[in-house]
Image (cartoon, rainbow, N blue to C red; front, side):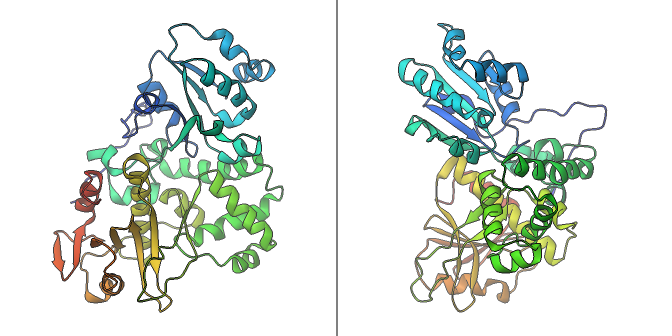
Length: 391
């Protein structure tokens, strides 16, 4: 049974909800880049988990100017007790990584470097510190973090960005985020000087969410060259707005297709860009539900398992939404009653005998099994996923 979300009124501060990713645990191992789209909660995570740690916020103009003029201030300001240092929004000053590199080699200090654009880091000639720092990604909320605050319909329509999901007016906040920030982000990347063209592209790209993209059709609809569409897609991937889902190609009885699918990082942002709300029982609701499950799977593999995540489509037209590692096939259906037609692709894949388990994630109220396929309520699936049962 879906619980109703608790939201914050206009007069209440947005509460901090503990996240599954622990920055202190990351730093206990090695220096890390912590990357994620804006407003996923990177700064809040640092503030609430690394008290007393030296933090340099590069959104602070005085801090930015000071370090851009003299990167050596990092070493000059370090104290003997400093074990960890945080640099927030490192992509604003990628040249600072040369000094970070030097300090990692010369001292025992470990750095947490947060950012929202891997593109700017690469473009600055940075090789992510040559292996001296690992990379972790922070995602919007997952159900396990929200607990009783989780509500599926709200998650699908408002998305799971912390400040928007908990907002008393998520629609207005989504408009500010998706309508203004995303365009400004790409302009800041220097990759979209034609804002009307990029706005057209962004809506069309959102309508392609969860599909194998026909780049020629997108270029025609957006009225931009195909090469520009490729560049725009790369920008969305590099700013972590868009995720590529590769094809799983180990099937042998049925020839697999090799093209990737693409998913936007948040269902609320996707819906706003599409100009849609997701009403239960519609095809759009089913697509949003699939995108949400994709989000949970990406977060799980990033925070815990490290398993590859792809999808399977045969040349004859069978398609299974997700393949986790080389062990679990997952089909997603936003239905309260699953019929044989809904399971045809899973049955076809099970005939390959390549995987350990075949799961249909659904809105049915109780789990059941038919042949090799386990039909699970989505809540039960997610509980089992985060408890590590699918390995």
